[in-house]
Picture 1: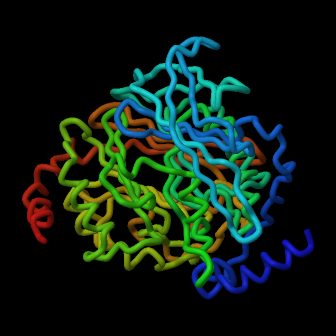
Picture 2: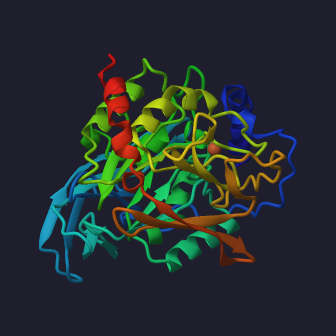
Length: 439
Ligand SMILES: [Fe+2]
């Protein structure tokens, strides 16, 4: 144990010049973070499925992911719409990875479907053990999302997850920074166990943050653990990287962007984004939402300006495409903007929401820049979560719920009109076509 702590300290020291160090040493003072929860190492019998989570995998399909210590356990999911009656089954594949002295369990990924919308399914992993159940999202409005970034696994995280568990939602959105394992690989396992009750029952759609990198110069390429464990439907959306992809649910097209891979106009991600936007049909999916980690509109001193270069590359394209809402994390506070573009107010721009306040061990980012910019509507350094209900083609209701002494208190709320309902999309068609046609 001693050796492991020393080794991790050395690795963190090596890593700090390559990205992680920028999170520390800022001038702001954060309140006391809560302790990381303590979890028994590999708490269950080795052949039992562990860390079960689900994610959308193309139209009418769901990916079931879990970990076993037993190499011979099959990548098999049996499922049906009644408890214990598994009239369907699917096989998938498994992978594993090693990271210095750590060896992961067998990580299974199995796609099941076609599934009906808004339906409860009961399922079992690996042909044995506990039965899980999940509800598929609806195929049309209304549809509801819970949102929290920068989760970690502290007492505050447990509080946030408990609040999310109390609300009615169809899918969880996580704009980066999941486990805060930060090179200590067993913390990916404990994070998987912590989120299993929620993540096994509703799809979790995530994108990567800086804490997922875990690269070591000349030794380890970044995102190895994240990509092995949190496989998202990138192939289904024409992407070649798990770090950016898209998916659709009810009448919403989601684009999950990567803040920590190339994003300039000559990058693979930018080329994929253009292709993906060209496929968006606003008749079928009137709402267009984006998630990424490092915010583009941020009036907190924490991580100030870190999203600027990505914004410079991609905002003109996303503006022309008519993005309704952009959700980010990274800054450990909450902030909501007016509709903005190019640094200022714009009625046809996106509403930007920063919600990196899930509860991680680093605590809150308390210092905001003053005076408050005109575009910033509401900002507060508290842990919490968001809820987004898209009611129909034209209206959505957003609310943010602060963790107030472990009780969720609705502290910000707003009705958002879709850009399609305000005439902005038809105004932009020519502009978008011009950008998409540019080689
Ligand atoms: Fe972050």
